[in-house]
Length: 336
Image (tube, rainbow, N blue to C red; front, side):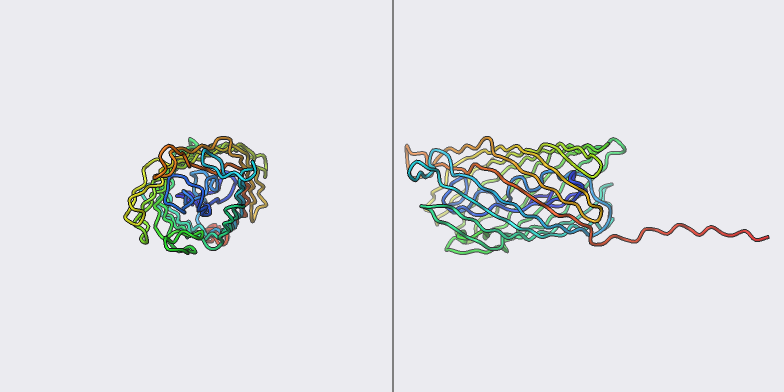
């Protein structure tokens, strides 16, 4: 999830948050052998604006599925067919807006716990399932007068609480290191329009079991929606790719999983506000996915791969508690 796991009244009219992709041990991006390459799944915070919601405690339940094929110069091929990959995720979380201000900004905090299952087809036959790393973030949202513009910044943290297996801790959906996630969000929210650019980066610490450190991952997510009464509609898009090099260790004899990847996706979002709760559904197809560099130790052979497919997300958002509204002062009665 990123610093925008929690966001204010999402352009989805709600609070939208982030989760993670599952580990795909054999599809090599530019990251440690056995790691999927990104802790947070791209697209999960689409529609989230920089506007903070009113004070209160909010809850959400999110589900999404990602289905694709392993592509690239090193993609496995079985009888002329590409190998398929599928991930299903469920996440539950809370957003708390205590009503505090700092430097003129509204403060909020978000916590999320996701669960996922993954299946990669034959001949890989990899099917991990369990709890992914939990996510916590603190955010500040500024409203720029009555212009309709908002700016939000935050610092998120993925904690190594997920299901871990194997000598490197990467044989299931959790990972054994910490991931810091600074983010910056720009939004225009006015007259039913919500236009948002959400930019965040994953910064990984070393794997304590191997001392390998995966490079930083850049995410950029874009939303342009319009509200029509209780409905919200509009296009969405995302980009994800690696922006810094990995650092190897003696565990791998200095070898680095030298792959770089870039993925672009486009799609649409629809939401409906029921009053006490809102539901949002958005879907995207990856229109460009490329990887290059191959794996160290195989000169002249590019083994780079990346998944290319589509994702569908659905989220229920609701307010659990809100402070009492101030009572209007009593009007004194005049007596003759």
